Image (cartoon, rainbow, N blue to C red; front, side, top):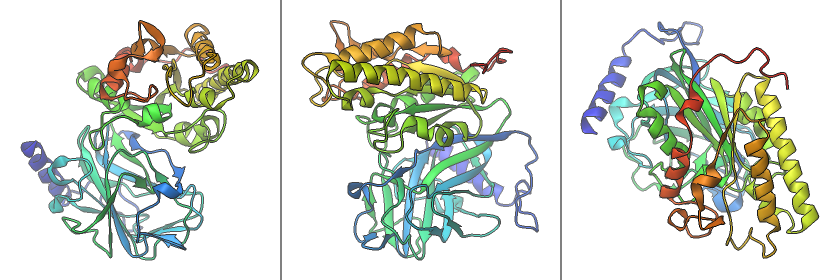
Length: 438
């Protein structure tokens, strides 16, 4: 690890004097010498921040957040490249988001969730050649390309300073980061260590990191809820099932150029808003508008079934509506040349909120899974139900995979899901001539 980190430090330091990516006189960066395209390497689904997930005092006040404050966050990328750019979101902000200064660096010892950086690696981020940017309500901003060598599966630190804060308590974040962030008063962007910083396990404002990658690199988006967002996984260890799938793909040269990007959120639903907009509403933003996407994995619907009334008519309606929604997702993604893979819904038997004594919700789950497996509408099926269920009680999770609530999985369970995804699904091949007709 030390040798890898020292090499990364040397590469970043050397890039400071390189011509590739140097800014033009007009403010925009020069084109890189090596051809390629932008591909998402890390994302977080933007959400309206609930009261319990706001920044801790004093970084939340009655009239806004992060006034004269520095925020430091780490993210684990999937694929690498020599250039990167960042996306910041104000999708749910109640006021414009003025960001004064941003920097990217390598974290101390290459670790996720740490508040220290390797100072020699810190690089300023610009927006149209300027160090600051104001993001309008509902909008996002993409930074200028930055020459900063990124290794696959490496952790990067993004530090931002808000001189005036955001003048609203409606802000954009991703609560289920499973990663520790740091905040401190004043401009501390360039500090190697944020001594005395407050901590919280949420991401704020940062919604994406793209790399300029070779033409064969492509992204697979995971569209899901808390089971994909990683509830039950280990904070700062990146052992959600998409993380473990990435590790598996990166271990083989044939799949080492596949980016796995996680567009999931706890409590999210397909049909109705929950925690974050429903999947049908956010499909354009979270999938179709993302960079370099060739594949989509849909693993969502448990929350729709679990929050619908436990009655025959209500559960038949939600099952039928989920099936129709999946079909809509397929149609819309196919129109953009994206293959769509359907994952069967995992069991929730014994969960106090979702399981019902008459089994109406379980029958709805079985009906939805039967359609996923047999309709032939998805381009392929990933059988997470079979991978996670108890063979002796198929309506329940295997006890060894159950985090304890009979709904979410532990890291071993998430590994079972990752191992159930056929690596061949991400083989690049031409689309059929009639692809996208319906």
